[in-house]
Amino acid sequence: MVGRHAARSRRAALTALGALVLTALPAAASAAPPPAPGPVSAARTLGAEKPPAQVLRAMQRDLQLTPDQASARLVNEAEAGTRAGMLRNTLGDRFAGAWVSGATSAELTVATTDAADTAAIEAQGAEAAVVEKGLAELRSVKEKLDAAGVRTEMSETPVRYVDVRTNRVMVQATSESAAADLVERAGVAGRDVGVRISAERPRVLKDLVGGDAFYIDGRARCSIGFSVTRDQQQGFATAGHCGEPGATTTGFDETGQGTFQASAFPGKDVAWVGVNADWTATPDVYGEGGRKVQVAGSVEALVGASVCRSGSTTGWHCGTVQQHDTSVSYPEGTVDGLTETTVCAEPGDSGGPFVAGAQAQGITSGGSGDCTNGGTTFYQPINPLLSDFGLTLRTTSAGADTPAPQDNAAADAWTAGRVYEVGATVSHAGLRYRCLQNHQAQGVWSPEATPALWQRV
Image (cartoon, rainbow, N blue to C red; front, side):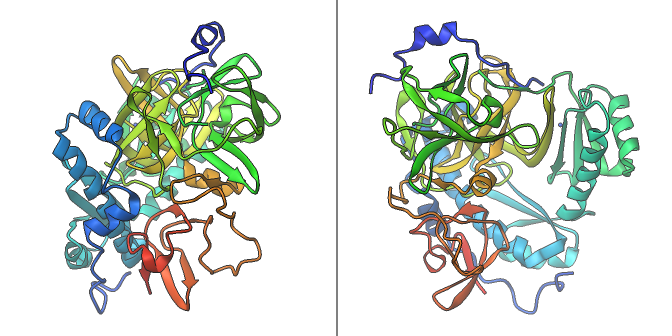
């Protein structure tokens, strides 16, 4: 193939679609939970032990870290995810969220609604935060706010999310009065809701290596997310606002590429494109300076963890996860389930990939600001997209012959290609396991071989 920037002159002439612009487990169980796998085990499983050099360099630049701090941060984040998953399963309804902090993410905090859980949390090397409301209760409050927004104009309160660090539901609003009106319509207690005042309003960043450009019907540009397969069809995941089902695409070199197979926006911001025989799905994402970073899986990162984004407009930038499960009201409609980050982005970056180390995180949706002054960017998590469309992520550990999940497999049997969420239980080789971190199962990630992802029960 010709160089990825060969079509730059035409890119400038094409119109980029506009960008979205802009806040009771038994007190300590009869036995303490089993010890978490050590950081080396988790780091090796998730590819954090030997991260791509481009990831480390961008983390040093954007997060102001030393080389040693960047390396340590990725290892700590991998290990923290496993411990947080164990505690989430142990605490049940009393679990109120988990997050990492510090320059190297060395501090893991787990929130609970019962002080009696403190010993169990500290036994896993985490700090306990005793709070009033569990995560499920906070999500219920957010759902009421979202439902109230459906019935009225949301341009004045465009962002709603659960902030596990403050144990409140946050509303980003243009004024205190707009936030108060939403709270009143939702019928929720004002003490459960915090307000972040901002004049910004999100907009979609419209404008088969992740981060490369592609064009829709010869008139708009977006960015490739992650390579995927469905049966024998190869393709890539991207943002739903980039194109509707049946829209045709051309690649960075202006040659025929594929067709949108499915798309949803608003509500969700998800799509996938099936490509022709000239294109081959790879586990690659463009990193700094056009060098490639390879994706090893899709284990979801914790709040506070570092993430990097690739896009056809601004390239490679890093930041941190602010919170998951965010609702964002764009002018075109509301999208739920997004993750908010401190990573910058600009029009044309839409659809591009977010990674945490070697783990795929999501697809760029929208945001505010720019990469000169900084900004906020939201991504659509990749695991729900894979599950919704029956796709298999192309990874370094999943070769071209990796099968899709089989419909005739036993409902509780561990199966490569299935997306598992924290708390899911499976059977494998005569034993039962409980999931510790959200991910799509890879062929080499069987439960007995990956204590970072599965706990025997």
